[in-house]
Amino acid sequence: MVVSELMTNAVKYGSDPIELVLARADDMVTVTVRDGGTTLPVPRPADPCRVGQHGLEIVAALSRDVDIRREPPGKRVTARIALS
Image (tube, rainbow, N blue to C red; front, side, top):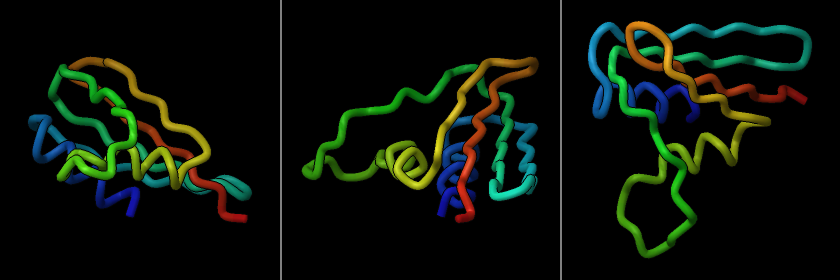
């Protein structure tokens, strides 16, 4: 779900190039998605009446932490997911 949400956001709101990196270390999986867009995603408060735009909210709920940063040529979103 985390990979799907981050990749969907990169395709929908970012720009090329898009890169996905998955890494495992001990009891954590790190999902990193980079894209060429410069606009950083902003977490929104939970709103059950809002239709759509819950991707980052879902990623945050499923992850131990989420890091969003600008880096040349665009941005990077990294989610760390506990396996245990």
